[in-house]
Amino acid sequence: MTPAYANVNNGAGGCKFCAEFGFDLTGAACVYLIRHHELSAAKIGIMGRDSQRLVAHQRAGWGLVSMWEFEVGVDAQQVEAAVLTWWRDELGAPQALSTADMPIGGETETVRLAAVDLDQTAAFIECLIAAG
Figure 1 (tube, rainbow, N blue to C red):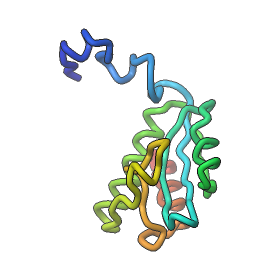
Figure 2: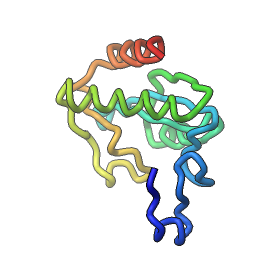
Figure 3: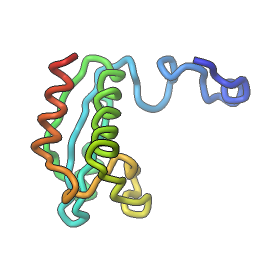
Figure 4: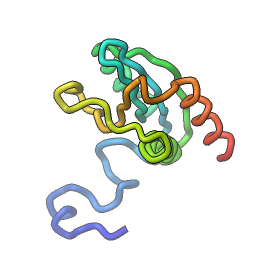
């Protein structure tokens, strides 16, 4: 890791594992798979185990498909990244929504429901977890 002096000096922190803000890579975490019928979209996401992030998405019309718990956030982050790579590179499914569609954020982790099978995505996640 090579943090920039200016970032550290401005309070942005130097190490993503030591940061006192944002997603905690060392704490308990969850990966969630959600869908929004009106937007015809799905989303993969991560959150700290005690986070209200999923509740915020549910208030915006998203429904939970499935959720997986992890002892450390970095494992959840790796699963999320693998799913996004699979969606984008192997399935050819681009980002589905814009910032305007998702005012609470997370638009970069979305995909059109027509482009992916959510049961297949859940099975893919299960395989990733089993492979460790």
